[in-house]
Image 1 (tube, rainbow, N blue to C red):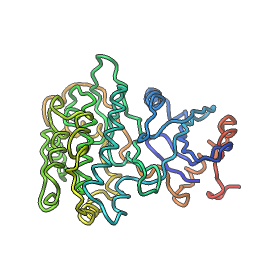
Image 2 (cartoon, rainbow, N blue to C red):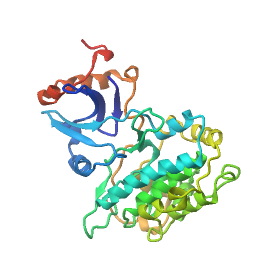
Image 3 (cartoon, rainbow, N blue to C red):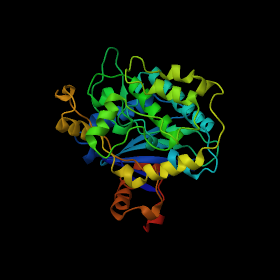
Image 4 (tube, rainbow, N blue to C red):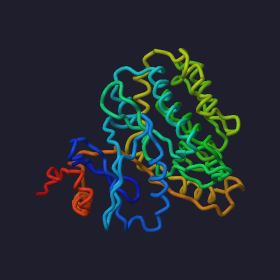
Length: 358
């Protein structure tokens, strides 16, 4: 058994489909935890039902018991984006370009279907397998939104380091927020540290709101002008001028040959290890906290409204964690969940022996 306490009210177990012996990830959601959150999970299911893309984790089935809801998800076992980069011995701009190409292609697919992810960040980018040429997969659609014709989104959500200025300012926003997030991810992939950072919350939020970032020396000295131009078009403060996914896919850094082949692994991996330790990810603010801080610090009058705020889990670790890391209370809940639905266990086998159960 591999297990994780994921998000605010769900857990994930590794299960085997009995008929095919195929491994899947099952998101186990206690119905008690859904009270008051029905819209959130219904939205995630509605989004996942519509998605079929090679770079997006798919929903394969749904089961329900008296006590739990089970989302059977495609298993991705290749680990998180940053971990894989650190483990590499050779890493170039071209590698980063290929990764971003996959992400852009997947997000363009979502946008074409009227879906906005709203929480794109490295923790939600997982490798399908441990193969060297494995696809990168987008996961976690808990905050995604299906755009209705004429509907303007205004709910603050996401993770501050990756959200667009218009989200933090609680202004109406669109699918352009995903493109900003891809720009931030691209920036980090080329230097290993975030474009916005300050120990002082007020200064951090001001940086994001003003879109103030730099290509600092010496970390960007060996990065191409084409890569910097690409990032600037995505991290454009004005969402009407910001690149769409389609435009970004046509940029020469993605579609051409301007991405350099020089090895930047040593510098990038060192900065990733310094700036993105798991302990720091756990301390990340969610968007609700950001808006609360900004109101307290009075950073602008645009936050004086009473718009409803939606929070998201402050941290996501690996989709699956080793059984030795499985806490007693979590494992116990899995044991109860696994036996709760005859319909589920008719199709799936959950290996609980490794947690010490009979």
